[in-house]
Image (tube, rainbow, N blue to C red; front, side):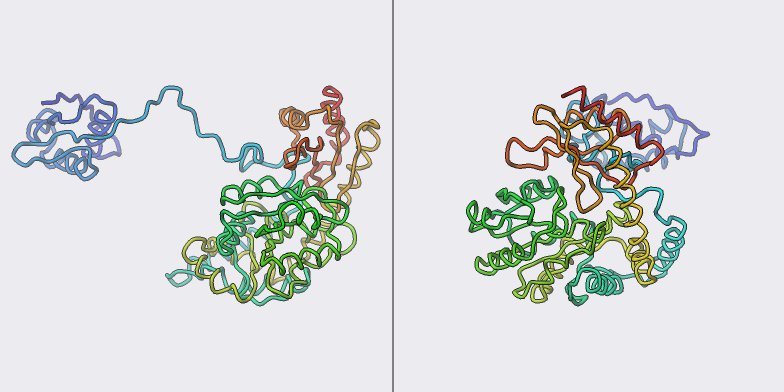
Length: 470
């Protein structure tokens, strides 16, 4: 019979039966009590510990329920046979996902960081009031399953917004609310049944998208871009039979050019003739800083071949984790089934908040303010870099909220980015966005979270890291 040493804290908040259970469970998990060992009887352990038999019985019943022990009736209670635990030597926390794309999660953005809106210019007081009302509304809602496609009011607001801002006429039944861009991409790939097939992707292009296509079992064919966007003829030469093309026609990610009308028509013709699909990642098109954004590619689609993805991550916050997918009308039923079974819309409270933010006109006003702010900050960054950068470093303004700094091929942009983060700066290396080797060495500098007071010092510090490696 096993000998147990159990210390009880009679003044503690944890019940005595729970303390007995935890002590025996820990002894089993650590190997102190081997499989098959008999535990003391209720009476013996109760007498040993000075507690009632019912207290010990409650602890033993919990151990049996959780399969740490086996009750044998009159024969007593013994330790159950359990699989061996893995060795813990050298244990370390699991690394975060995609460490090359994401650094620290849930931290304040640093200077030059891409992919996040302004930390200081967002109307937090207004947003807090809206969120509080949305949370109360969600709490008071009938107890039942919400529409997995997304809140009907939000889908109507998104459809109306797309008609005005992106020239895309759609009805709410075509709109699906998703968990950000990633959720929309996942829903699109599942709904199109393209897993295991071939896909075109821009080169350079967003590494997360490339990784997602690979995780879906797709073979990715890199298609170069030029001043007119995706080179459709090059895509046909490389992979004419591809089932899918993923493009950023509004503002190419990361170089910023807008796909020309001729290329758009050519891409749509290819999709129609090959029974292929196009996923339009409407990357930053709502934040076109110079001139008016070109209409969405989906607005030209007459054959139902384009799926349009947008999100609120770059305009409101990545923390809301809210995006949307617009599908051809004849596919809405299938996508609704998939959303219900595999990819339902996020929590109702955040959907209610974004709905009110849009319906009351706050969203469009916020976009106008951010465009003015980002345009001014981009000009300040360009002036600063032009004054400080040597001739070997080429600075290019994109159409969006990023400045591209092209570096000599002898320099490692990844190394510079790693070193910059230790200095409190967060440029994004350009070369990992390329599939073809060698990729252009360069730095992508976001303009959304610049401090004009410290900007000259930040630019000088960043360029010092380049000079040290040149």
